[in-house]
Every structure is written in C-alpha cells, then in structure tokens.
Length: 252
Length: 185
Image (cartoon, rainbow over all chains, first blue to last red; front, side):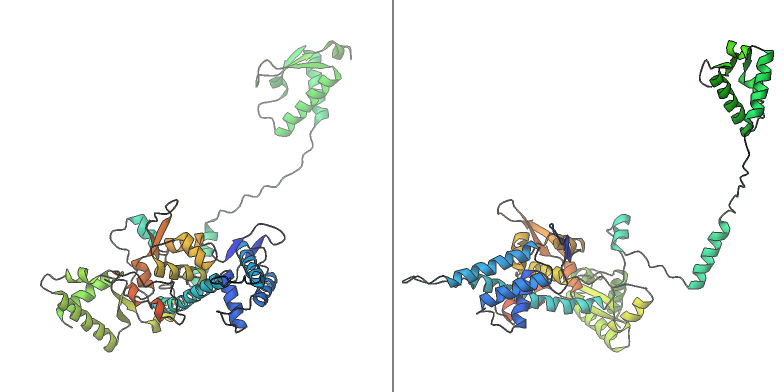
C-alpha cells in the first residue's frame, strides 16, 4: 500500500516505488553517496543530469514528486550560472536550501536504521496475547489476529471425504426425444368439430394429458385457426378455450 | 523468589501489555515503590539466570514478560504466535519524523520527506503507533500527531529520551530540535 502509488498519465499508468527509494530525496541522497560527493558542495549540473537519467531509467519520470525535484535541481543549476552581482552584501548559495533538506533527510535515515534495529529486537519476542479487560468483544476480536488453522494432511483429507459423503447423489434425468403428434390431434379436433359446432379445450385435452399431447393439440388448434376451420376464443386469462366451427371449415 | 516477586510475576503473566510501575505497586498495599522495584529486579534476575524461556523487559512505560528471541523461530514455525508485519522503510521514516518532531503536522512531514504521507500516517494510526495529539493554530487548523505508548513498546524504548538526541547522530543538524521533554515516565 505504501509502496505503490498510482500516477495518472500515459504510458505508465502505475509507478511502482521500489523499497530502495522512498522518494526523490532518498534517490538524490543515494546518488550523492554512490558518486562519493560532498553533500555540502554538490556539483549541481552533474547531479541534475544524473538524477533525470535515473528517474527515467526507473520509470519514475511520470511521478510528480520526482519531477518536482528534477525541476528544483535544474533551477538551482540555472541560478548558479547567473553572474554574481557586484557589491552584493551577502551571496546566498542557491544550493543551501537543498543541502539543508538533504542533511535533515539523512538524519531521518539514521533514525530509521536505529528504529529498524530496535523494532527487530522487539519483533523477535512475543508477549502474551491477552486482550485488556477494557475492550469489548468486538474490539478484542479486532485486536487479536485470527487463530491460525492447524491441520495435518490426514485430517484435511478426512474432512474432504466427510463433506463429499454428505453431498447427495445427483439426480440424473434421461431425456427421451418424443415427436409431437400434430397430425393425430388435427384429426381428433376435426372429428369433434364435425359433430359439434362448439367445443372446449377440455373436450380435446384429457385431464391426465402428457405435455407432448397438450402441445400437439395446441399446435393443431393454431393450425386450424390459421386455415380458417375454427375460431379460438378465451374470455379471461386462464379461462377454458372455446373452439367454434367456422363456416369456411364447414364448407371444407 | 520473594512473595512480592511471585505476585508481580502472576500479574505480568495475567496481562500481556506493559504494566506501569504504579499499577504493580498497587498490587500490594504494604509494598513501597522501592520494594516493587527490587522485586522486579529479583524477577528479572531469576528469569535471566535460572533457565527460563521468558524474560522481563521494561518498555513502553511499563514492565512486560516476553519470550526469549532464540525460541521465536520455533514458535512461529508451528504458528503458535506470529510476529507483526515489519513496517516499510517509508513508514519508518514517517514514524521517525513524528517521534522527533512531535507534535507535528502532515505538511511538515511531507516537507522533510519530499513525498506525500497521507496513507503512511493512516497506516501508523491504524497500528496505534501514532495518535492525533492536537491541532495546529495554523491555517485550517491541521491535525498534529505524536507517538504512543505502543510505539515505545514496539521499539523496546522505556521513554522517548532513549532515542538518540539529534546532536548525537552522525550528521549534526541544527534544525532537528531536542526531543520533547517530560515524556519520561
């Protein structure tokens, strides 16, 4: 979380800050150490050039913090190039501010080394993990890490076996394709309409009809309606369907 | 061991956090602070010389029984206890700045580190190493941070005075002031 910082702007959508560099000052300090330069008398032109080259090589040249430092270095370089005005009371080295920050930062690095050593010593010792009594249940639960799960391979396999045994045997359906008998349904309906001018859905489809029979009748009725041999009417949704003989059908 | 040393051992065993001397002294109304101090020394000596897996440590404003470092690897291997995560170098830098400059605001830390520290401060707050100790009188009254007792405990410090003074560090620097006074127990 601390080391990855998203930076907007192509081509690098993310800049990964390596643990080696914790910011522009760190990089600059490393550069000065690598080159064995005197921190109080930095050859700015050279350092600025190397700094820009390094952040480019590290893919950090899209990171604002590093760019800011690069710009700062170049500005100091430019200031150093300006001729010193005659008779000026006191000439302030434009590097002074940078040197101050570098020294300050270097000191922090030293403290970090000390803290790292002390922290390691403490991390190598365990205290009893008892939540203090003032904590409520929730707080205490948060303060303590969850207990690690300890299991031997045998126990794990036995548990998996138990779970698998409890799983019900899956129901397997075998699906048999069954052709619809639209022809037969057509004959049945025509025969019925030959006897009666009006009939109902229930007259054609029995109570215990199979789905294939229901579908056959439905398709037959739609076919007859299309041919104009009958008219279909349903007064309400889900009401019984009325089948009425049409004159055209009678003629046929 | 004296009965008082045994009592202190029981109390420190019952509570895993560093227990301040005042709390330990309250365990026995007849014992003076000097009695408690010498009993603590007796207990520490007992742990150090009679063959024990634990030792008595003074840190974070109190006394604490901790396991000896030589057993850490074995304890961790079977996951009886796990070490806290190590802080990143960036987080440690921020923590160091808070320790030396407290009470300190975010802007000042960022000025010195040269990078933004918002998420680092959040991490340190969550781990209880720093806390908000006030507000600056400056524009927007920004929050000021300081280190906590947990910081001292996790870095085996009895008090902030145990950190090296700025002028003791290799790089002499006039801008880092002395540690805040009055933080010793």
